[in-house]
Image 1 (cartoon, rainbow, N blue to C red):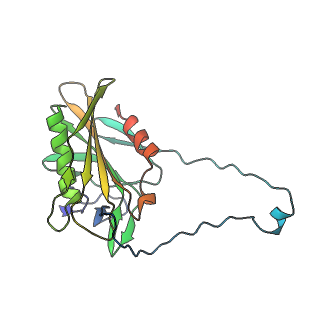
Image 2 (cartoon, rainbow, N blue to C red):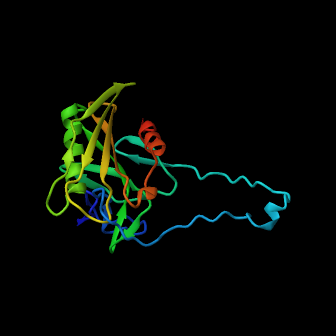
Image 3 (tube, one colour):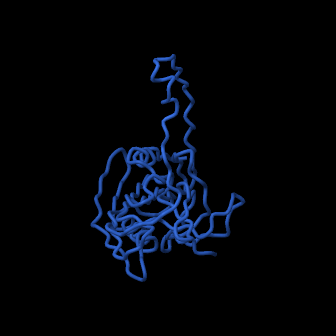
Length: 228
């Protein structure tokens, strides 16, 4: 196995393009960040033709469809720019159907703003889900040996599913990372006595926030969970 830096120990890479050494983005506010890859938005067609009141044409392009991910008896949707990763572990819990947001490079490391996967467990209790979430937080947001702060779980139950949300605050400082994160776990009952659990880990804020999902996209991922 090889450590991915995402909070999971991954199996050997799948036959997809390799994404080794990925790190989930985190940091502390107030750090002076110097990063490359600055994107400048340019307004096309703002020259003399537009100012002269010439005719304009609006072209409508179809939006790429979201991808259906599968793992641990569940299906869920991920944005079209996301990439499939290898299976892994959060603590002693195996994660399958792992996808990551578009990778970027910072200080020589390949990093991502978000990752989603799924697990099968025998209990959907708050304690079980919180344990998985804390393992993800500790493995993904420990900086220089200092584990992050993890909030008490916020639990909701609706439509036959249990949702646990954990707020994560890293205690270390790094120029590449975001100031906080949110880990969402959604447990759905499967046939038999098992439960499928979606695990969504999103770094919030920081210099590369645009590489991760918006709040609306994160909500869509969580809301798309179905029994396969």
